[in-house]
Image 1 (tube, rainbow, N blue to C red):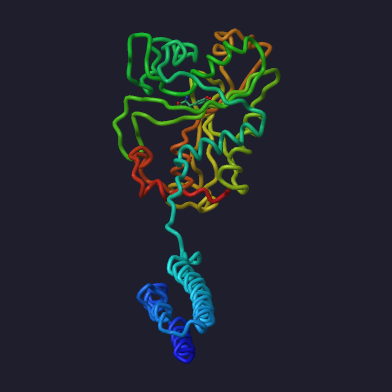
Image 2: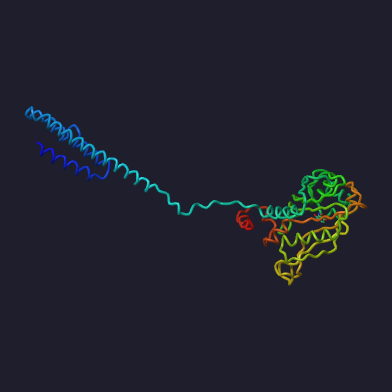
Amino acid sequence: MIEQLTQLKEEVIEKITATENIKQLNEVRVAYLGKKGPITDLLKGMGKLPVEERPKMGALVNEVRAEVQHIHDVRKATLEEQAIQEQLEKEAIDVTLPGRPVKVANAHPLTRVIEEIEDLFISMGYEVAEGPEVEKDYYNFEALNLPKGHPARDMQDTFYISEEILMRTHTSPVQARTMEKKQGASFKIICPGKVFRRDNDDATHSHQFTQIEGLVVGENIRMSDLKGTLDIFAKKMFGEDREIRLRPSFFPFTEPSVEMDISCFKCGGEGCNVCKHTGWIEILGAGMVHPNVLSMAGYDPKKVSGFAFGMGPERIAMLKYGVDDIRHFYTNDVRFLSQFHRTEE
Ligand code: DAH
């Protein structure tokens, strides 16, 4: 019987060691250690032994059972650990795989140009001022030396809300509004915003577009200050090699009035398609604030003077980025918009 027991022990240990997973181990456990297994049978068969041998034999069987149980438990732990390991390997994430690209939004090209210009003027001590898009005829025209019936009004026909209220045709009314508010004090402002005109939309016209106005008022403000300021602006926006040229012009709210050109940034002045073979590109209108405009806003034109300028961010963006149709800015086509990445940041 002892021999039988030893053989059985070796057999079960071999089987346990050979198992490859928990399922197989369970099968071996049930087969050998279970109620119907051979070890239980042996215990049951003890009744047939002589009485004096029974305790010894009983102890031996229990010893074998305990040993087998221990080996089983160790194997079980190993197999469980192995199973977890396999599971982890199966679920492992390859962190070196490229991720799904996230689409990054860009600022609209017009917003970019406006912010760039704002930043430049803020760095020179200007404040940003804003005014209403639905404006009084008074601020849009009259306070800017464009009385009712003035022929220059024709160039800026717009959408009227009533006789006296209209969609502003330029950002210049913010000049008059700011002067009124400042009550005789000196100041420097830059005013970006939307403006409206009764134009038929085409590649270079839009019934709604944007402008940026600049205004400096104080004692001893001279034409040379305007020229120096515009020169800095041209160089910062279009390159340090740019030169500016002022041509005489007319605006009712400035006297004298000028139009500013920059030397062509594409050909450097030789003549090309961008500058229409003139070497110069027209950028903005400007001038010394008309005495009538100053006095209507409560300033004494004998004591203070000022300069002003007005420009279109669309035109600047079109030149800077080579955009050939103004309507691209308003149609929200992502194929157009996604081309403008902020590379300078
Ligand atoms: N308001 C003018 C326009 O819309 C642009 C302009 C010209 C503004 C000369 C100014 C200026 O401040 O001095 O055509």
